[in-house]
Length: 122
Image 1 (tube, one colour):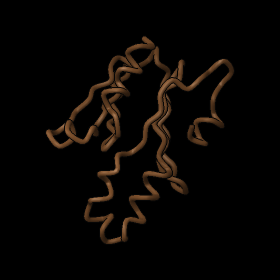
Image 2: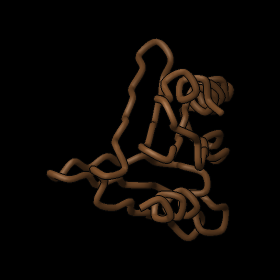
Image 3: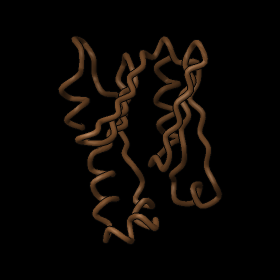
C-alpha cells in the first residue's frame, strides 16, 4: 500500500483496492526527453486508493496534489478508454461528486477494476 494512504487512514478504515499509473506513461515525449526519469518519478509518487470509506488519490512529492472524497459523496465513477487502452488495460477515470464536483485522472492502470471496487462498496 502507498505510504500516503497508509499514514492517513482513519480508525476502522481499510484499503479495498489500489492501483497506479500505467506503464504507457513511459512512451510520452516528456518521458523520452528526461530519459524516463520524469515518468518513473510520476508513477512511483502517485497513489490511487479506494478504502471502505473514501477514495484517496495523491500525486506529486514536493508539490503534492491530493483528492479525498467520502464514498457517500460520490455520485459516479466514469471510465474512458481508447482502443489501445482496452487492449493494454489503462484509461481515464472521472469521479463525479455531489454538487457537481468533477475530477479526471488519466492513464490509470486497471480503470474498470477501480470502478468495480467502488461500485461494490456502494
